[in-house]
Image (cartoon, rainbow, N blue to C red; front, top):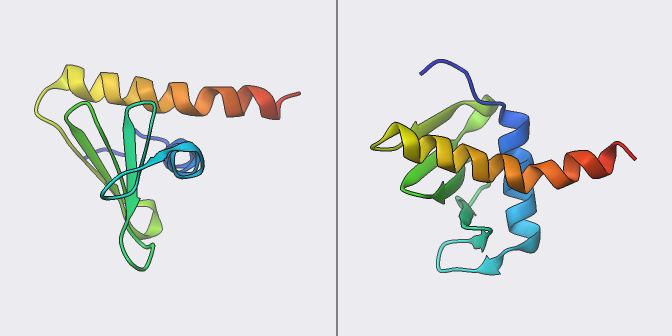
Amino acid sequence: MKNDLNTATLLAAFEIVMENGEETEFGKRYEGIEASTDYDGYNIYLKGNGVELHIGFHNTYNLTYEQEHLKESFLKKIDAIVAPTVIDNHH
């Protein structure tokens, strides 16, 4: 997969979900995105809208989805979660 996702944005979304989300069986859910990590924290996962994103060591990632529109919707949710933080940081 070509590296077209901004891992800094993805990691920021992960942090926001973990800070603000409600507990789930696997991690935390916020704004329709579920975030979880493995026992050592080297692998993190973001799930929602039929999409699963795995971010591993050295910011490698794997995005799994069945339809392109699901991926687009998922990435828009990620951007929406992170956007207020970006705006806040400029003031």
